[in-house]
Amino acid sequence: MADSVLPTGELIPFKEAEELIARYQKMHPGQLEGFIVGRNIVEQLLAPEGVDTVKILFGEFEDGKVNIVLYPSDKDGNRIPLRNDASAQRGEEDGGDYAADRVGTIPPGKG
Image 1 (cartoon, rainbow, N blue to C red):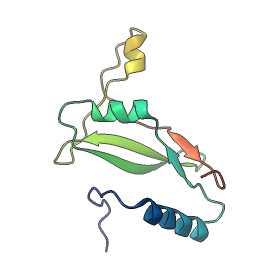
Image 2: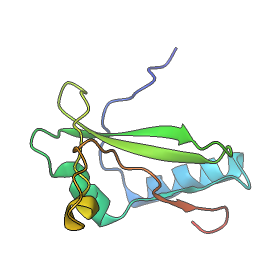
Image 3: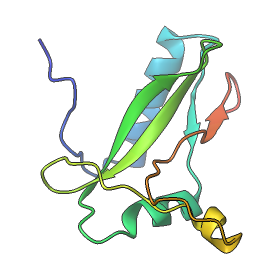
């Protein structure tokens, strides 16, 4: 049985990336092609002291739509909670316990 969480990867050539994407799309026609994560979210995820990795986990809304949830984690895989900068800018106390969710999606044929 394969590990459910694989270790961090490495940079791969653009051509190999395109081949992986094409293979996935061929095997899963009409399915969601991917997700878009904005720079602002990536920066927030990496900002807290001690962040070593970002876990990308699949989640599902009540309507069955798949999404990803991103958790900043330390070197031991422990989740590091985030503050919500938008809440802080509005003067709201947020408790500092957030993960990234509801990122953009790339529907079929739009990749």
